Picture 1: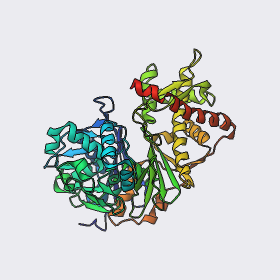
Picture 2: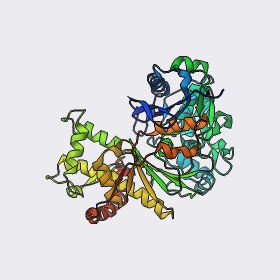
Picture 3: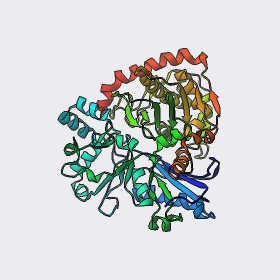
Picture 4: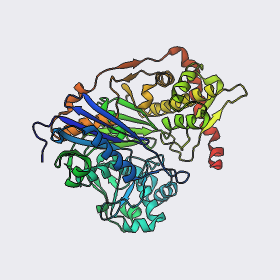
Length: 504
């Protein structure tokens, strides 16, 4: 069933790490309604990060859709697209019911032993050549093997292995489909050369299960299916409403701000910091991730830090309990703005949940150096913001060291709404950052994907949806201290790594 001629509204839903967001737009990209639902994350053991697929992911989607379309004629909804944190691992039984909480993306570091075993058995260089990536905590293959080895009762019942966005698409449409971007991270089960699932290394990951446990593959802007009768009853949507394949949240966020041309780099300031650099051709390197884009024939170099917004959240929760919850961040950022660059001699490694790119060290931990009896909380918070900034620069320099061209940097996410943090990162990196006029996030990009999948929009319409906003220029007077501290930042990691690993 296609969307009707009179259908003129689009729904975009995104399930993030600490909140879910939705928007209702018209075909010109005007946001008519938006809503945010906060939720939590479970940390059952050190290195384990999980969420409930039905109690959080699907519950939020249902509540967002109901709120966004309340009072509207459901027939006006031309299409829906969903994104979610990812890549995650979710095991389901033969009826499509979750067997356990979802295992989250690279912040979950439980599968270190499985990564080492797969590298030993298959050959590290062989895996890299096949997958265009080295194993990191972002990879799903080792987490599948962890599940097989550590939870045999769950494994025996596992009929489908998928990720968050794919599960939500299934709940809406009854169709099992996963986007090529997230499928890239199901290494070594995905072959990026043929864009298909590969049985070459399946035995080492899946044991006696077949590749049929994985969803079919699709591009983010393609039609996945239509709202089922059951989903219509739960959400209020019209049965038969088109559903897009959807995406991982970072990919939808990049789309939402027009990061679609080679040389465009999105920096997403969220609970973690995520990077997507659009490339005309793949450029594999073990320090970063080489993945597919949203559209067929599009490639991305992707990277991700393990903590950023979650680190400022930790700081407020643990070191600023005296501040009122609703105003803690405003006070902390305002105070940090009055601390000079270099944080009065304090330097921080932001690796509180290990680190993803470019060091790919799940055993890394946070380090604060340069403390004295004169150090204040304001100094520590400024050092926290700068530490994330140095991590961002480390990733950008890694991209450039590969010979890529970073022509334009676009900042998005909750952190991009904070002028202090944006200026710190801009100064540390010595590079201009653009902040579009509208930075709602992945849900806005999903609304555009919904329009593409429903046949209501064309890719070039994105130029109408994305409007220019702020330009953040670097303050050159801060360059000397930040150049020195960036080199110290890299040395601090290498010189404390062994001690931190032993502590962990």
